[in-house]
Length: 337
Length: 222
Ligand SMILES: Nc1ncnc2c1ncn2[C@@H]1O[C@H](COP(=O)(O)OP(=O)(O)OP(=O)(O)O)[C@@H](O)[C@H]1O
Ligand SMILES: [Mg+2]
Image (cartoon, rainbow over the protein chains, first blue to last red):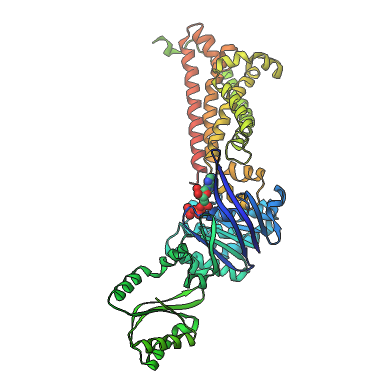
């Protein structure tokens, strides 16, 4: 649905070229929720703004549903942009228009007939749960409600793609969750491709299918969220994963245990159905290995439950080796730390 | 306090003067908006970082506006006499005072327009762009409505400024209350006429200002 090829972007600031994107290649599939995570200044906003040419890349191609936007004239670009909705961190609603008129705005720009606009606005108000707020002005709404208006507005032209630039960063955790749930719902109901940008791993973990990690204007790691989350390779990725994994305390525990002798410490990862089964306990009993749990989490990534246990094996060397082999045979991911 | 008796005041002449002032004010405000609004929009759009950013054009337009604004109105009026004659056929009376009023006030109003458009949240313009709005649609459906209360405040300030300009135009025979004040009050020392005209102008300014303030309040959604 979206292909970025060799995308470079530099800003001209007082005659100096400031590079922001250094060759981005990205391919986003139809119907998926693709997350882009990175630190402040990594180039996230620049990247997503290149996807609808709010920012014109210095070189490279931006292909949306087969059309290279960089090759279009103004009029055709405006036409194509109707197929790409966008929501913003600060909502960017028309303060002089009511909720209803804000949602109707893109339809008005597209010169749709009045009756059609009214029907569509009714539909969208219902979709985002704001039926009772049609005649209010944005200043009278909460942040979460404003973002719902933003989402409804972005969906008005039935886009194929929805771009979200830090759409939940101005919201509290609870409101964030409700907005994310709404996005996931829309993704499923309408089959909409969603690209979202964030600096919070929590956001990626709760709704994204795939994730790209951007650092210094390049994508340093990319893949299925589950994969990247459980086995982060790049230091930046590892940092983000730590945001949600209490790894700090774990490291202390491991260091403490290791200091007190030659121990075997392993990280065992459960996925999906395995998460709720007593595989670890069974295996340890069969091999007669004594173990203690140093740390454990059970959580959920989008729809997949997963668990991660860090255990110290206290059997003899042979027992420990056997236990690890058995766990692997049963399909668990085991990493000896 | 002899002037308190108002014995020099010819009320019918005051009435005519008031009507003349109001019609000068009405027409000059109308044309000032018709010329100043687009001029302000163009200034804004061609300024740095905006939709039609064009450094050369902006600098030239900005310079012309500054020149017109820096010439004192009374001098502008005299300098413009030939231009006025060419446009409306006379440089006297209500008709003759309208062109200099407009040429004096439009650049001023244009700057106010430019400033209030600058207040519009850039993100809103970007949102409209992301929806495929053309530049024209952005001006018409985003910038002007979003800047509405600022524009109304600008119109109020300009109209009030025009009230004093109309009075000044009395100096070169522009007609209206200013003309009366100068002919009777100043040249013939009839203080009472002067005071009556000043009071009427004051009341006019008060009405305009409170009307403007009310509209600004009504349309502000922030
Ligand atoms: N309009 C601009 N003019 C000049 N430089 C810019 C502009 N926009 C962004 N940059 C620079 O480009 C780089 C990437 O910025 P970008 O806004 O894409 O970062 P970001 O990842 O979105 O950060 P944040 O999380 O803070 O929003 C930064 O170094 C920034 O200073
Ligand atoms: Mg950003």
